[in-house]
Length: 194
Image 1 (cartoon, one colour):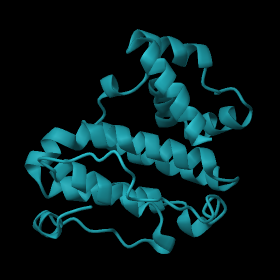
Image 2 (cartoon, rainbow, N blue to C red):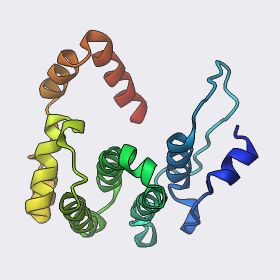
Image 3 (cartoon, rainbow, N blue to C red):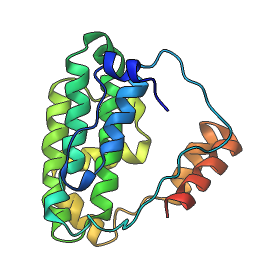
């Protein structure tokens, strides 16, 4: 629940996109970037419903909706220098995760098309100094560097099964950066994602 005056005073609204794709991402980002205080409730008051989770994986019209939503978040920060200084590199990391999620769920040949855009957008982020590799997990740095250098090679390696994320490598990372509780939480999140 949001105070209407908070939304209005911070110019927070949904970006209109075809089929209401990814709109909650930009809205939530603007809220969290603008909030000075929040209250967490134990009881659920929002029930998130997905009527057809796979509806956009084969839709050429929705391939770039995630890009539009991230561009809207960037526009929001660009108009607010104090927020941009604080959140721009975090937004770049969020862009990576959102783009990779989108890429992994697309069907062929949409994946091949999208990975090129992925590479172009991140080359721009790199040129602008918005890539802070310290925010990225090690395997994501490797993937991103490959995408930047040769997006089609990355795609072909994925299709051939050569770029599967190492469970051992991820497990060690989470153990070293948070111990057993962080590893358990990562496993729970991954299981919930499926």
